[in-house]
Amino acid sequence: VASYYGWPVSTTHCIVGSMVGFGLVYGGAGAVFWSSLARVTSSWVISPILGALVSFLVYKCIRR
Image (tube, rainbow, N blue to C red):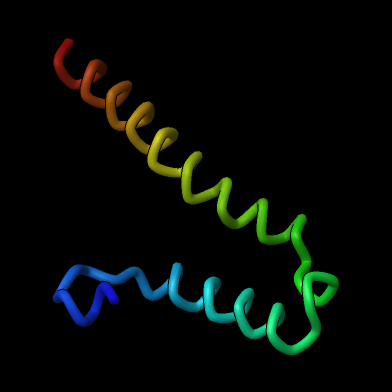
């Protein structure tokens, strides 16, 4: 859908989504390692927040 409309697509999200989708189709919900998926998706949330915090601290140090 995103490619059809010309929207940017993250290859990491596509790969993870396709692996989860294939696992669900092939082996059902038991074939997906949900704890690993939770770690990957939480890193997508935590990483930008942590990056913003570090860049803010670096900016404050430079401005002094």
